[in-house]
Image 1: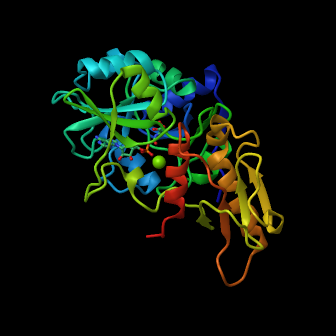
Image 2: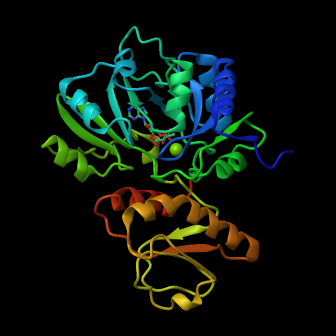
Image 3: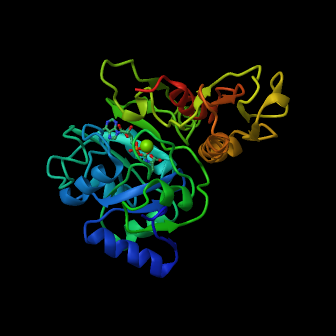
Length: 331
Ligand code: TXA
Ligand code: MG
């Protein structure tokens, strides 16, 4: 059993190889600016089916379709004036838009989970190069098993999906570190479905209108909205102002929680309190503390990662959202 999937550098040969595997219908893990994604040809239902199987993802969780820009998106979704304005301002980048699916789109119904809408986004970097090479839209969830931490390095993706995928392209550490912000555009209004790498405040400032918060629905609008998601093995305790002996401490900023000296391990998301740096470190540091605690092989009670309070503004909304989900009781 391989402990890790094959990893290749994201150079010209690597990109051509990844495109060839994708054309053949098998999924490949690729870097985006947010997190590593597990890509499959969105026009091929067999390829999309294989992607759901690799991730062990429930089939009622629709996927984000990655495109090369507005022109490719327009082949699959209806782009209203407000959506066009968002696209002109923020693509390529960490913003996914949920828009009406065109009836003749050709997108695998499995990718859209049978919904009349489709989430589309135009990523930066290596992923964009692969789309350009393929000239096809790529469905891509984060390259992890459903419910676990999202990978922000090629090695984390390769470990998470070892034995399940033929290739991970290595494009280095993801610059943003948390998944895209998801906005639904309806009747020329914006609704936030998931806080992410593009702060809501930035969207409101650029568009000159509010981004409404999604009303709490009986059925989650986005599986990222399920409570127990992004879970490490250890329990996660947020807003920690006092540390108990043996806990791992995920710190933030220059001021330490009470009794921090008792922590078994400590990593600081950003000593200078920079939100971008904190978001970029979030998943890798949670995974590292989780691995450190696992090595202790603590008997009885569960290991705990205590997280210092993080301000809610800007990228803090996405960081705190992921932490709250990691802290939620496991299903
Ligand atoms: O940054 C990202 O968005 C990364 C990278 C790889 O691009 N992808 C990602 O995908 O986070 P995933 O599958 O982990 O999250 C996709 C989210 C899910 O919560 C899903 O429910 C939501 O998008 N979604 C997709 N289509 C939707 C739709 N039509 N309506 C509402 N939510 C939708
Ligand atoms: Mg995910």
